[in-house]
Image: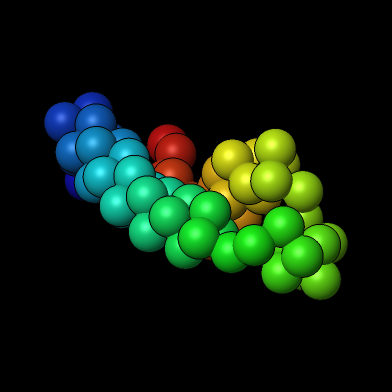
Length: 64
């Protein structure tokens, strides 16, 4: 039985996983030069959005 407590626990775990993965990915992309980022098709100002959207798709949260 999937209870409300389990739901919130899963949400917290998902949030922690995304946070850890976000920090790692953001740091790695931010270390790249502007030219390396351009080769990937990413502007420096878009790093946050690229990482956040990718993680949202790769680490989905459960729902009822």
